[in-house]
Length: 380
Ligand code: A3P
Ligand code: MG
Ligand code: MG
Image 1 (cartoon, rainbow, N blue to C red):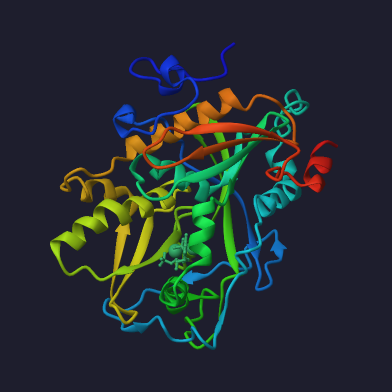
Image 2 (cartoon, rainbow, N blue to C red):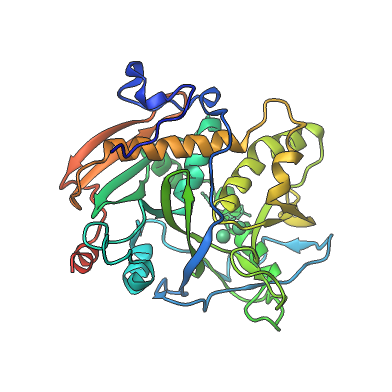
């Protein structure tokens, strides 16, 4: 039987003999009907503490406390003296997700009949952030990506590899840029409380090692996905819907003063915000708009379900269907290419703006990312 998808009609870019090596990212190719995307179901969660230690629980969950519409939050406060930054030289790859999988394997196991070959009954395991990059690829003109894929017991694991350009950018960040990366976390501190009944503590330390992550299961067309993503906070109302519908994504963005700025915000920023939250089924984004001095001057809530309407007035704007169809076809391409079950083999998919997606194969290389503790436990 066929294991890959054949669209009923229209171009199928990776089966086109002229593109036998690659997958096109041209947006026109993906303007089909919206593919089936099943409502994401939270199957678990985990927390990373102030020292980046893993806990199979929600201890790092935070609760959203609605700020004033015009709050005057100073995002620069604490950057010098109350900031502990996660070490971004440490590449964690899929490790925390894999740790979650091992701890919760019984929840995921397929029926006894299939448990023998497909250890998990999903086709892909990855981070939400990697899928966000795939969704926005047809519209991305600046940053390429590298995604390492390993097939192990019939599941495809997808883990990002930092590109050389991204590495260089990271090493050459300006002091201003470094500080601005803090601002988003500082906004979280102004709007989140540690307990249902407490209030935010803007006098505390911002520690970006801390994280609460949801693990969701869903299906994109015939691709069964298991992925995890960081969640900023939740609605503290006890009558709020169950996760992920009670989750809230927090963002900061430059204040919008001109029609041009508004148009850019709709065309570029909302695309990223939409893709990130749509994937795990997070229904809303609370945005803090800041001035040049890093002061939040207004706060606005955006519903994910209303974003694509909001942007339709924009000329040459992004379309959710293009994002989802490209992601779906990329996953089919991966399934077609990465066929050998072997934890030591990496299929490295690479993409640069204005190019097709291509791949190379690596055995026992620097790219191997499934840790031996995972392979060993999963082989039992
Ligand atoms: P903003 O979203 O307000 O920019 P997230 O929004 O995904 O929860 O991330 C929280 C903050 O982490 C961001 O706040 C930003 O400050 C920082 N951040 C997220 N992704 C980043 C990236 N790729 N590069 C630099 N900083 C990033
Ligand atoms: Mg976050
Ligand atoms: Mg956020």
